[in-house]
Length: 65
Image 1: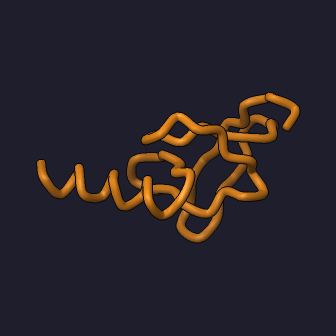
Image 2: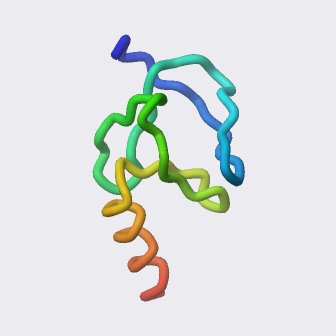
């Protein structure tokens, strides 16, 4: 990784790179996610998740509210 944070707009089934970089940060764990490994995000919250585990944790947290 070049250690440059990308700015991303999350879309259904895709994302748009607004500012070039090589990674984003997981909204739950804080882990860096390489753009070529980015598979999980929330369009409404505009957040990325490292894996299905973090995505599920966020979903559970939102359902408890």
